[in-house]
Length: 560
RNA sequence: GGGGUUGUAGCUCAACUGGACAGAGCGACGGUUUCCUAAACCGUAGGUUCCGGGUUCGAUUCCCGGCAGCCCCA
Image (cartoon, rainbow, N blue to C red):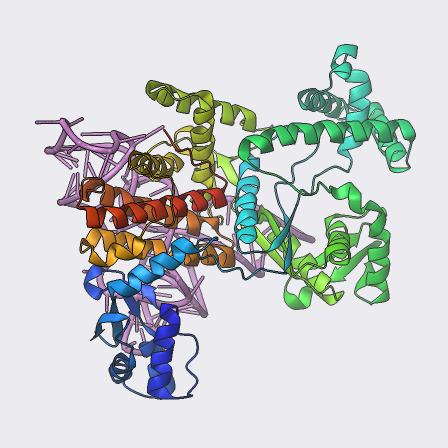
């Protein structure tokens, strides 16, 4: 039984079948309040029209003392709970035994589509792409750990006017050798050259680009072949970055995939009287919801993102019938998502749509763009991260692979440890921090516990007698034990809020508690009786940290 | 003009969605390696949570009104 259930039973015992609602027991904010605190007596006071202290007293009486060493009512009606070490030992044993470290498999049988990263084809990835990729991937991993069947989809920007410019540029701005060894860098180069020419006064180049685009849209064989080649090369390049970051997609369905479904969507919108003509365009009026107006077909007959995203929802619902679709994009798109979510609902698609917006990354206070000239390529960042990590790692005989684990881990952790909603101003030193609240801090704690277990001749043996911890009276032991029990809850909270930062924060706190324990409590040199259970506790810490890091997509090397 | 969002220690951020004395990291100052990895640990200093009202036993959190930054839409 969980503490929540135990406490809820006490409430029920004290107040019968009254509507009590969910009872929640939280870790105590201060050791002097015991191990756990419950504030629900205060919340119930109004409902029951009773003095909160009276309520708390009744509940305290009803609480099963088999689990609690001490129960106190404090202040206006807080319940302060101190658990028995027998309960603690049993709970730890259960956690250690669990194949999934206690993470509830609440997603079993449910399907989720998660849409993230989504860079534009024919461009190199830059630091602005880190957030969607890394946050999206962590959410992906977290939901999988809860038992969900997750489909990770990369909604590439692989269609649109830029391809007219690219095709023209490819044919006339690149030399034979560049065309033979086509890279994304070359594509980028010819795009820039071609786009510059398209701005010339006479408009000749621009018209030519447009002509190429029209040919592409009409299915011209040569242009289609080129377009496919561009996409293929782009995905190859993206995957090179993704493999460094430990990111893997199930599907790469770009905007082009939904092209031929757009007409049908518009037709349906008109049929349902949702879309109406306005100044030559077709719009859906969402003024009532204060969401303005969404254009679903422009006056020139072209479609836009709203239409394409609706087609995408339709396609996903028909193919997968997911419970939820999660989109991880920057927060500038909030209005757009609110609009098409609303329209999708009106169209009757039975799926929960979730937008996870994150604050845009800037550099020295300015938006990241080619025009600002502050576009740091992702590859450059990762190389620098590796280089800096290697400087330190080599002193201890670490190799390049270790430098990658640490360097990339640092980059990812920096992003994941912040609430997605906060905007980040990129800074080399912060992005690559190796101490304090950083990825390497966690990796270091993990390596140390691995080393400790190895010295004891144990490698993550979950059959260790953790139950013996009942004999351990050290406060630091209890503190660590209580903290480890919070792991499943941290994973659940991170999922519910779509914030990997909650898990990152938990892991950092846990590693801090372990580091303090490690510093102050002897393990290998303690009495035989204490040694085995302390080793078991360390082993469990190692497992929790490893699993947690895995959910964030960060490597956990055994040695540093 | 309308809408969104953010404002917390010198700096970067937390605060489990309304709980007890607002916590971490960096930076500053001081201490700890004949002892399981010092990328660590322990301690000190640092706060009118942007301002003003309101609701509540209780507000960084919710409501109203300002101010400032960023973003989106005409």
